Amino acid sequence: MQLFRPLNEKEYSSLVKYLRAKILERLSVKAEYNIDPTHLVKIAELKLGVFVSIEKLMYSDGMIKRVLRGSMGTIRPMKNLLEDSVTAALYAAFYDPRFSPISVAEVKNCVLEITIASPPIDVDGDWVRNSMVLGYHGLYIVDSGKATIILPQKVVELAEGYHQRTGKLLNNEGFINELCERLKICEPMSIRAFETQIIYELRPDGDVVERKLYLNRFLENGVKLPVANR
Image 1 (cartoon, one colour):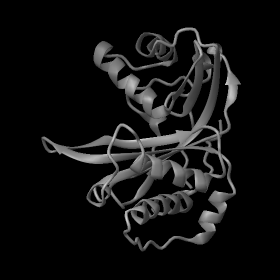
Image 2 (tube, one colour):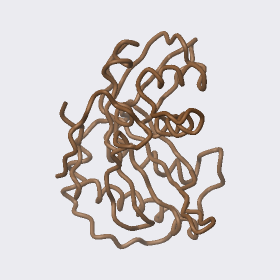
Image 3 (cartoon, rainbow, N blue to C red):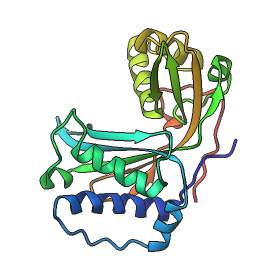
Image 4 (tube, one colour):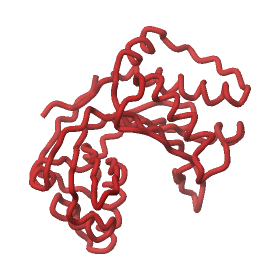
């Protein structure tokens, strides 16, 4: 199985810098980043789903925790990957109703995470049970008329809770049970699956890397993915 990697390291690093610059621009702060315009042109040529999360770094008992500060996204491209990423980033920073608009001081202590989604395909419960790679695939589920998006980050969150309760790793069968018991998604009317590339800053305005959540220690994947760098 080939990894879904629409952006290489230089391109996704430029995208994160560009989004950070757009947030600062909205705050009337000029950001001077050296961004290769050819990277932005390439990104603007893509039509893919995208989700942007902003997380605030919190320090507690000598540990650094990443706490959600805002998020927004869609699995259906509206315009192109570049413009949709900007829209999602600005919404996450200023219009997420769960939070107040972000401040200049907060931006300096926040990291960005971008999840790029492939075009979704129709699947069924057997595919989720036998072929889904936990921490890599996302799901768009319609159950009782309600649509729910399950990103890999949510799967890892479920896996951590499952391990705390049972001491076991989460496999595909366990994931299906968690969907029913924890999220009340038991007999979905339809399921669509998509692949993801997850990108995030290690620290505010710092290095940008890919998150390979399918390697998370709380997951037990039957289907293995290659670990590739480019």
